[in-house]
Amino acid sequence: MMTISSRAATAAFASLLLFASPVLAQTPAAKSDSAAPAATEKKAEKPRSAASIECSKQADAKDIHGKERHKFMSQCKKEAKDAAAKPKS
Image (tube, rainbow, N blue to C red):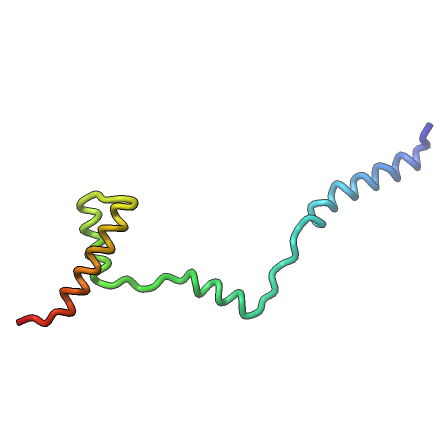
């Protein structure tokens, strides 16, 4: 038969394990060195070109999505680049 003090000690130990286990399971925080700013710079979007915006509007007008949109955008931007490279006579 357990005494009151041994029951209290058991309950305290069990609650300690219950509340401490999530803290112990956490991974350590990342160090704030030069790697952290590089990750945020990668996520920064590049400014879109006028050709890209125009091609996107054309794809929206044609209601193109998914792989077809990707192919259309690539071809459209390539054509716009070629047209800009050719001298106007």
